[in-house]
Length: 379
Image 1 (cartoon, rainbow, N blue to C red):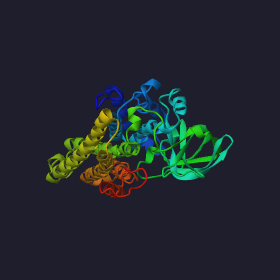
Image 2: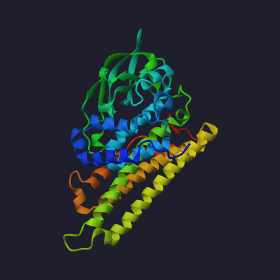
Image 3: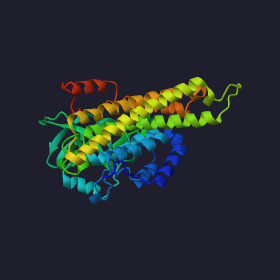
Image 4: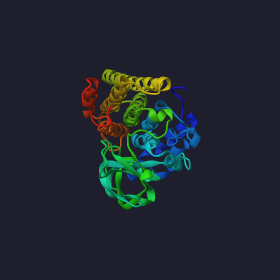
């Protein structure tokens, strides 16, 4: 299999990115990605990327999907963050096969979103599990057709959360999201009141897949970290491209040299490019090595599994630093509210705050490298 197989055509992706750039201020005002853009995400294959071909999906590789999310994130990080939840088709493979087929066999472009933490108590009833609660951080829920919520069931002993899957019309979305970074992700609260969920519509997030396709045996939590971390790489790429184009066409109003001719701009621009290039290389090298192992042996070895996690942390944090350097090089103009460099810097910094890839994730990586106890789901 080609390690870099495309998910979307170049023409369709270019048109989508151009529209996202044109409309990103609109997204910021809405605080979510509008449904017509979600539909275009479906058109270019974001939500069917990991769905097996027998269900009408594309059967894409992890690296192809990450490159697609990176491209979208270069146009707008919030759009890339919402697109990244196309990964849901992999961890929903922990559902019973009949349930998975009912979802994706009917619509391979199904959009899943939800809130996982904190898990709320679910009570067993004759019809399944009665779910009630509130979950924050429901990124992408405004465009979802099915919604997941983290639950805990009395008597069940699992370090990973169980997730209940419900139709979108069974939940209430309270528009609580009002953030300075990743503002258009629509990460609102999900509220559920006494919804009965059949047990076969629940799964352990990060649990053993019930389908045997190769991609479903790829480390699920590593992939969940990667698809988020790559948003920071895309945000940094967008910032540096914007800075370069602006510097080449702009003359100083004071008569000073063009920014492109200034030594300090040249030095730090090269530093940022080097930082981003190193992070990207480490990130994609790890994914491609893991996929080679999957194709050859059907599994990823422990050392590579750990590498997948810490290169995701590196991607998120180095991407954030590269975007910060771009902001600094933008000078006083970049301070204006809504400036592309300021937005990219804050968005990338917010990616690097996520628990999967934040500063604390280095400790988990170090523990794994020394063979010491690690948090649930790590590596």
